[in-house]
Image 1 (tube, helix red, strand yellow):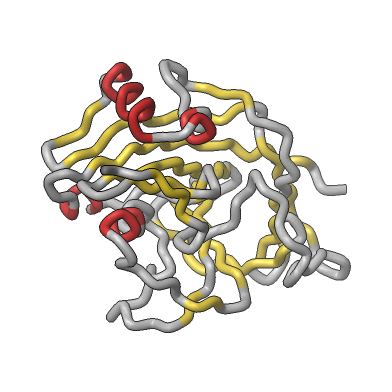
Image 2 (cartoon, rainbow, N blue to C red):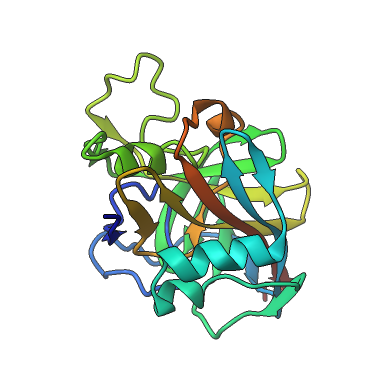
Length: 233
């Protein structure tokens, strides 16, 4: 018999913009030079709602709706949007400030801009965290393969014990920025898992489809939230 379990946020490799963060470790910006400030736009754009299996990608909305009805709780169901390309953004406290010395501040937490890769700007927390354990079940193992930026991102031999939590921001390399929002659930022959913190700020792995086996199903909703620049006084 299949069961549904919320996976605690062990696999989240970024900060969740739609949730208030703890005060621990926060660093406000007094004394820092704020170069630019960005706020969330009025709507997030739904780029994709799909089911991935070993045999291919399903985009039929009725089939996806059936999967959700069979496998997810009512709260989980409310996170997915059908037949729409734009959704109003609920009120949140996200503020992204660009600071001097290659840094940013998100909701009073200073982070370092570590990499520009393709269309992504990667920002990392200064403290390190322990790498979470994987392989607890077939679902947790599959769950960890979906996002591109994971705790082992950049760890060449996958034996790292600690990592810096890293968050991707979509960028055109100039002054246009957006937050990539990934909401997903996974099902194997044994179980179904979904993230306890939706949406996750992340992008899809380029090769997770090649790792799917018979019985695996991955429900993916990918959205972007444009960030709007506010003039700094």
